[in-house]
Image 1 (spheres, rainbow, N blue to C red):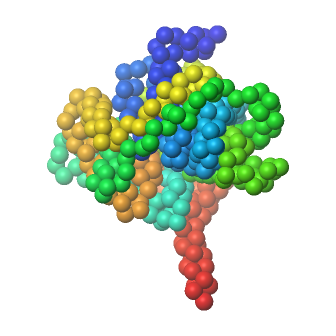
Image 2 (cartoon, rainbow, N blue to C red):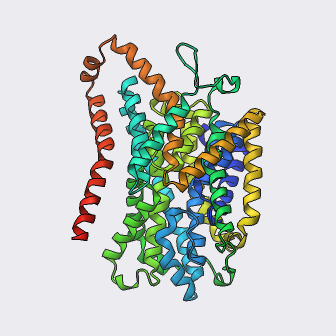
Image 3 (cartoon, rainbow, N blue to C red):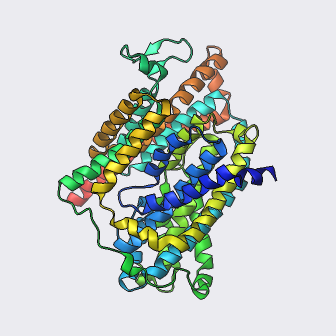
Length: 500
């Protein structure tokens, strides 16, 4: 009863509604995504109740993924990468005059997929937390390293760049005073840097400002940034017919399970989950010839799976500190800002925070479906907002949020530097997700390594060999390090055979 009182308190419910509605609008804006939305909102959560803050952030996460389907269906422009599989079939249906039905199906399936993953989060997380209880400093160090390395897989075909990006994040994260000896490191004599690189302004710069710079470059190159009005494709009721939904119940549930499982796998992401469910739907469909040309089954499978990924990605985040997606890496920063460390303590010492957040996540998905059916036509208007108007608004919000963190102009400078670094990395093919994760986990990785050195009593090899979990994690770390070179070798061999 106390948990539900926490969820339905005034401040928490307002935060929930802001997260759901704000996430939809963010996801529907071409060029914005869930990662940017969560990043921009983190500074607003500093003075908030941790339950309200985390519910708002997770609500933005799942709602933004759904919002991306609106632009994917109406203007063939996925608002988020997770909605790419929806774009072809959804847009084809819209051109056939079925845009209303496609958006309605997307809304219901996103709600079901997110709710199913929320139930999985509620039931599986405590079990996985029991495993976390068996881990010590060395295991947490290796899990942190593994999470950073596996996040490099977000950049397919450039895995080595992803790993280097994560390592760069670790190096940036150790700037400041040494946690054991109190000696300044890499501060260049700047007293502001002795406290370390402020996390929230750095994340805002890396994601939000760098994306603005990319959009400005596209506008300068003459790329069309103002879209045709999609509202004319939304005539009629958005509520799908029960006869249609009933025939797709099995497909929606299977796609939700696929998305949840894919979300648990670190670095797989919503785009992988949606494409896997889409392929499954096509293979099992009675009309596979319609896929890509206007299949309601394709929209249902893709949207159920990509929202199911959101809850799945939170499972390894909360229990092991390993984010299952780029947005989950940002949420890790939100947890740490509120003094919460992933692991068993979240489900014991801080259970009064964790369980209301999980139930809030489930409720957010249900409200997302209800509100989405009511206001999707209004959200469609966001699609026509020019980036020339949107970019200055984003910069203003980012600057205010960064300054408000500590009322320091140094934080604004950090934001600007993070934006410049993120822009350069995007242009050179380096993914920014591993960079941000390395920055978030640097203190955790370093502290647990130093703690492991103390516990080993001068013999790290013997201490390591006596811990089977550490050995397993070390094997995963080595495999992750080697895999980019193996993948590159296979690609080169394939190119050679093609040339012959």
